[in-house]
Amino acid sequence: MESQIFQLQYAMDTFYFLVCGALVMWMAAGFSMLEAGLVRAKNTTEILTKNVMLFAIACTAYLVVGYDIMYGGGIFLDGIAGGDTLVEDALAASAEAGFDGGSVYSAASDFFFQVVFVATAMSIVSGAVAERMKLTAFAFFAVVMTAFIYPMEGAWTWGGASVFGMYSLGDDFGFLDFAGSGIVHMAGAAAALAGVMLLGARKGKYGENGEVKPIPGANLPLATLGTFILWMGWFGFNGGSVLKLGDMASANAVAMVFLNTNAAAAGGVIAALFMAKMMFGKADLTMILNGALAGLVAITAGPDTPTPLAATLIGAAGGALVVLSILFMDKIKIDDPVGAISVHGVVGLWGLLAVPLTNSDASFTGQLVGAATIFVWVFVTSFIVWAILKMVMGIRVSEEEEYEGVDISECGIEAYPEFTDR
Amino acid sequence: MKQVVAIIKPFKLDDVRESLSEIGVQGLTVSEVKGFGRQKGHTELYRGAEYVVDFLPKLKLEVAVDDPLVEQVIEAIVKGANTGKIGDGKIFVYPLEHVVRIRTSETGPDAL
Image 1: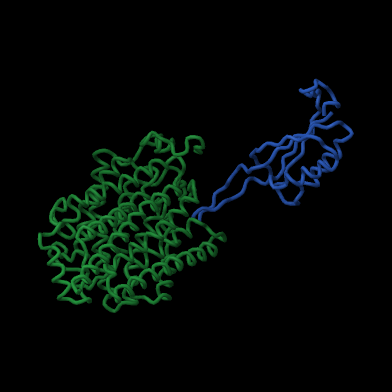
Image 2: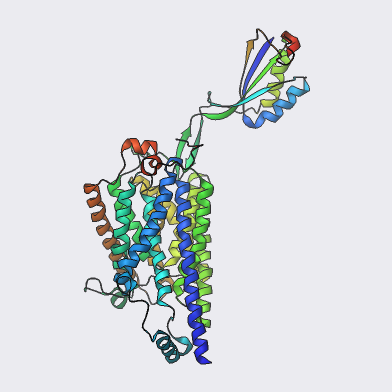
């Protein structure tokens, strides 16, 4: 009887992991739609191609070596199948721990859940470099990012490894990042920032005297749909990061994480709406959409400990911060068509720093050291990779190709052949 | 005969059509056009930065009428399209040399 209950617990945790993984996979659709909505019509096919391509590259590169670097498990995942005594071992471990033990689930489900996070980190990059980057350069970078750069910092944090044998973020500093405000979101933004710095702004974005010339997105319904898809996928992102559903305490934790994740997104929307209305006099939809995502990013580092009200406020602070950050990025001429660096980077950092507010296990120092470690590692290695790509093959399309739209030069297909508005 | 051409704000089309029907105008041609006058476009906002849209959407009306009706037609268009705000549009009146109704080959005022 007991054995059957443990088997059921194992099955439930595995099932929960897989469903959450599928929800996070769906975030790829969210990023695709958001980015397709915020670029011009002439660059739509290319951004969609990039999003599909990066997802496949991330899955494959992480399968080949990424997962092994981050968690072990062998190159090509040859170590995750488990031995002949897999079932007996899991049952024995469950019996020993009673119902309060650690997470028990299939190793394959763990890979599936982890791999979609890699793709999420990479998706963040694609939006920031949109409308002017060469598709092949982006593909090469995606390989390095998902096979090496992300898995390394993932190993230092969730993997528990020490940073080049120097210090351990978990043991020495108590660094906490529940579902990846820093590990996934800020990391993606750091790679994006390095890319944008070497890539330069879109032609016509900034005037000679530093004035900002808006380049409105082609399709705000798509951008809104993308935001809602991401919002939904985030329940898997944060909810799944509880890693376990099969007992009452875990079920309560999962419910709390869902509640707080949703509350933070709502807080982010309201704050961004308020900021936009106050600062510009208008309810700028794109800012509000960024506000929703900022709320979600902000709560991701610690959705388990805040009260619902605290979660709303953490999300609201993220939503307010993202509006200021987007304006600031334009001031310093970091051209980010979708606001990815602000949403995931600046607010990702805020998310990490907000953890100690409600979780006494974390400290500001520890969070800062963790954030600095992730940022420096990802930014520096990304910068080197982008620089090498720039020297070897070039990372930017020609001026004429940029004017005509990268749909034609990179993909040969227009997204809306009958309505292309240049 | 005269051809009256009017540039109006798109949302006033129904009002103008009604006031023209009231005075017995039988036909009307409308096209969607873009342009600007003294109002000089308008500004829009995207992610906190303003930008100017130079050419605003307008409607162009064309009405062909017999001479005695011209003043009434002008009055009707003004009545229908006036909002008192900048950007209400303009009315141009041209002499009309010749008209042919294609179905019956009638010509002149009979064809109007």
